[in-house]
Image (cartoon, rainbow, N blue to C red; front, side, top):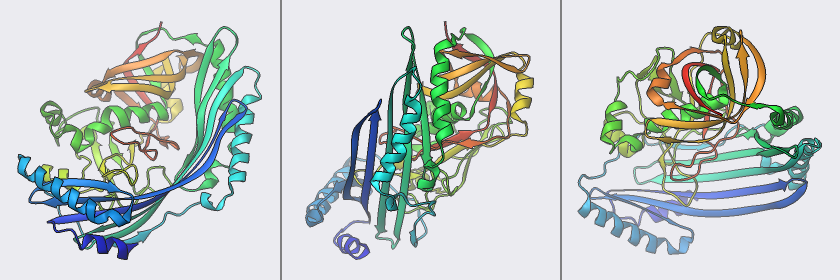
Length: 454
């Protein structure tokens, strides 16, 4: 493949060019209730060619290698049109030339597991959920995605990397004839099929929570002190803060760029946030981004002060900041865009039990359930929660929404536990889908949290 891509690049008469070829193999198995509704494998491949010529940038995706000359002519024409219309030329920050092949260490490569065994495991977990008579239905499935990427540049970089992702996840719905409730269930990662084994207790527990929610009381709306768990804190970190750390999001937004400038005080001194795709074994792990830049641990917020942004080669040059390898594509159909890899809030020094004692009276809110952001404001759902009285966890509550302002919420984090936990299943829809988007926090104690309820 390297020779084929080199041959294509030699025909590109531009100031800079890179080409990425991907082969993507997917396996999907889906149950709706007790019924198997989908099972199959699919393999696709394609190319993405990017060029810069006279300051104009363009990209093109194509699947037929025999038509590469047509693709070259089209992308060069587009780059030159962009050059004539651009207010400023596109410049890529200089990146070291890399020659490497990388495959992650996997605990059981899922490609070596038969589809019959994958079906058997998915069915077993679905059956565990469905055995409870108050579970009305499920939508539970197995998804496996293996991507082999080969990347070359006219600068001399040559990289081949594999990304392998597996998960069993979905929705559990309970019904007692008067009320319907649901919770999500998820197991998976990018470190092999082994992470999916021996998870019976997790699926049984999630089914139990769905049933318990039928007897939970709607939460009382108001402004409270609350503890949020790692999933809910992780979604807040990703959605409310993380996207504004992506340089392309704030680049042309004068107000947000001023607020997210290096050195700005954004939150409590307890809060430090990092993005680190190099964490092997985590869902968001990769060694090189889709511009051939080595992924780097990147501090974004340190003791409440903004110290970094996530960059592509273009925005790193525009902002005059270091490269950190955060430009990633969904697959062969797309040119890469700036994405988070594994974003998390650094752990604190308190135990979860100490956070409960500090809280006294309030709520313990668990697991994210959808939501949205609008500028610096956010609204997220929580799947369920509990009242806390005198530092003790009490009755379950449901129908929970939390909302607030990013900066005031960061300032209102009054304690952070020492129990950092990362997501096993991810998803981010910024421009393209990214099933490897990983996030996490420890438990967080937050003051003045606005909770919507009855």
